[in-house]
Length: 169
Ligand code: HEC
Image (cartoon, rainbow, N blue to C red):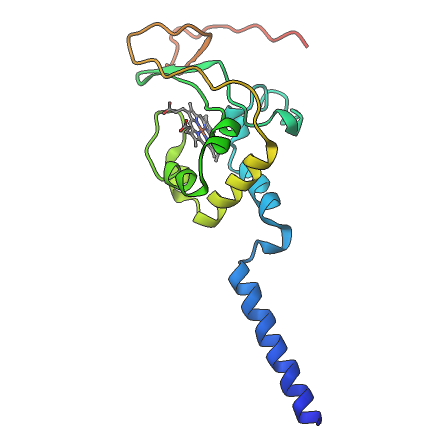
């Protein structure tokens, strides 16, 4: 009887270990929470959420990742941080993963997305979808040599340096 009980206990333990392994080390905090964590430490808000870096990350979560209407201009032309919330709503999880595996234009650190595990990319998908649709799609890419119709941040070293006034608080 005693042997049978400890055998059952051992089997239960093995089962527990197996299910913890199958779910991965992140299952305890949940997929959506994991996606939020990846978004924050992945620095996605730094570009895809207006004013996030300047405010020290103090932009309400309801505003996160809806893209930016200010372009990044450089030798690649002018690019705009995409509205990831609309993107996630318009894509299946499989399409989202495939998009994360493709090259993008600067200064999007697409190579960091390529290095991200499938589990993290999927968690991010569920997190961004959980935020819901918000805002407009970001303006379209403008090729080099063509004028952008929006304000831009110029990614070219300025010589002599340009003095920029502090923003009014
Ligand atoms: C330095 C600024 C910057 C950072 C940081 C950044 N992005 Fe981007 N992202 C951009 C820009 C600019 C584009 C548009 C690139 C283009 O036009 O090819 C973009 C495009 C994308 C796209 C493609 C959108 C589409 O329409 O297909 C995805 C997906 C994306 N970013 C996800 C992320 C994620 C996830 C993170 C965080 C891990 C992140 N980005 C961090 C600037 C940034």
